[in-house]
Amino acid sequence: MLANSKTASSSVWFLVGPFDSHETVRYLPIYRLPFQIGRRQDLALSLCCKTVSNLHAEIAEAGESLMIRDLGSTNGTYVNGRRITGPVPLHREDLVQFANVAYRVQQQTAADTGLNTVQESACDRALALVQFDKLMAEHAVTPHFQPIVSMATQEVFGYEALGRSRLFGLEMPAEMFRTAAELSLDVELSVMLRWESVLASQALAGPPHLFLNMHPRELAGQGLIPSLEKLRQARPEQPFTLEVHESAVTNPSQMAKLRRALSKLNISLAYDDFGTGQSRLGEMSESAPDYVKFDMSLIREIHAAAPRRQEMVATLVQMVHSLGIVSVAEGVETQAESETCLKMGFDLGQGFYYGRPAPPLPARLPV
Image: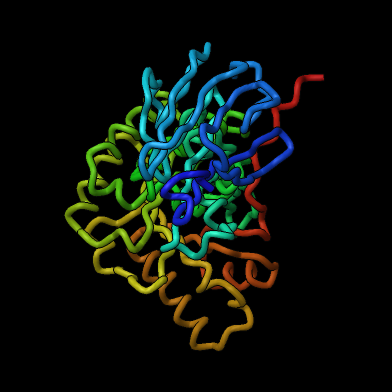
C-alpha cells in the first residue's frame, strides 16, 4: 500500500518473484516510501546476494505512480533490460532488476478484483513473465525426446523433439508459448527450441532422425528457412523432419513453396495432428508431405471403437499411402491400440506405449 499518498486508497503496488532461494513465488507490497532495496537487513527489501550493493536502489512516489532510482550501486539497476542512470517511472508489468536479481512490477487497483487480496494466478503470471526473460537469455530449456517407432519391428525410427523447462510457470510448451505470445516472442521461442533440441540430440545414438516442431506464425514470416539453413549447416548429415500443424496448412501455394525449400535442405515435411477437423487430402496431393501424423483423438481406444470408426481410420491410412506418404499413429498408449494400428496399415507409431518424452541420457564412457 502506498503510505501517505493520494493513491493509498486506490492502489497497491508490489514486486513479484522469489525473494530467497527456497521460494517459488511471493508478492511483496511496496508498503512504505521510499522503498529501499539492498543487502542491508534494515531495508524494506533485503537481498542476500553478493552482486547486490548494501544500499542498491529505492522506489519513491511520483504523483499517482512510482519512480525508481539507483543509489550508486556497483552492478546497476535495470528497468526492462536497460541500466538506469537517473530516476525512471515504473509501470505495471515492468521488469526491474537489481544487479542480477529480477522482479516483475504489479499493481492492484480498485478496478481490479479487490484491494485486500491478490489473485494467485496473477502472481503466477507475473513470475512467468520474469522467468521468460531468463528462459530466452540463458536458453534455459531441457529438450525432451519421444521415440517414434516402426510398427512392424518396434525399432526406433526417430524422435520428436519437445520443449521442457525447470523454470516455475514455464515447465511445459503450452505455458512457454502462452507467455511468449504476451510478449510477441512466440516465433523467437520456436526457433530457440529447435536449435537447443538439435544440440541436445547429440547425446542420442545416431545422429538420430529428429522431428522438429514450428510455430504456425513462422509460415507468414521470412525467418523460417534461414533458421533451418543454420541447423543444416550445423548438422549436415542429420536427418530432420519439420512438423507443420494441420490447421496451418491453409495455403496450397505457400505449402508448395515450403516443400521446395525443405527439399533443397534435405529436410522432410510432416503434417501433424491430421484428422482434427481440417483433413485436406486434396491439398496433400499438390504438395505431399513425407509423413502424416494422425491425431491421438483418432487413435485413442481404437481397438474398442465401433467398426465404422475403424473402417474410416483404415481408409484414411490407405488414402495417405496412395499419395506415397508415410502414416504415423500418435498417442498410442496400450498394446491393444498398437496391434490394431498395425493391422490398419500404420507405418510408424508414437505414444506412451513406446516411450514417454525424456531428456537424453548422458553417453556412457567406455569401460
